[in-house]
Image 1 (cartoon, rainbow, N blue to C red):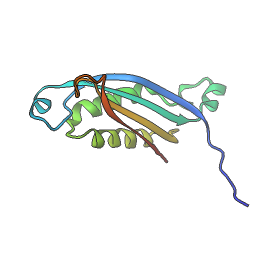
Image 2: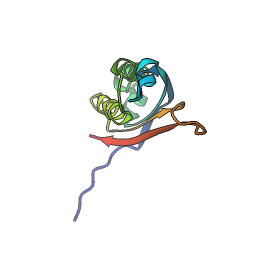
Image 3: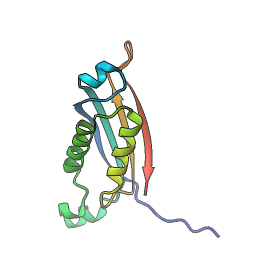
Amino acid sequence: MTQTTQTSSDKIFVNNLRVQAILGIYPLEREQSQEVVITLEIDTDCSKAAASKDLADSLDYATLAHAVAELTINGKYLLIETLIEDIAQHCLRQPLVQGVSVQVEKPQAVSRADSVGIKIYRYN
């Protein structure tokens, strides 16, 4: 008989976090910052915070969003692949994070497209 572990299906999300950052391999992308749009969906358990009404029992999404923005801005990444993996790993190091879906988009990268990007899912 296989035993399964019950995990939470609670999600905390940050939709369309917009930052100006150096991201890309082309000369213009290395010189001028561009808009980068980040969406996070974090698997967690919100029940303890709901019962206690204490932020210490919850994931502080404002602090997490700020850290992700700073990582993106300060990293001056060449590839979205590297940035998105670093964001996922940063999220997974936070207490209460069981898994994370990260999407990173570059709206100005391809003419005639709203945006291009990558979406990944990682878990502890």
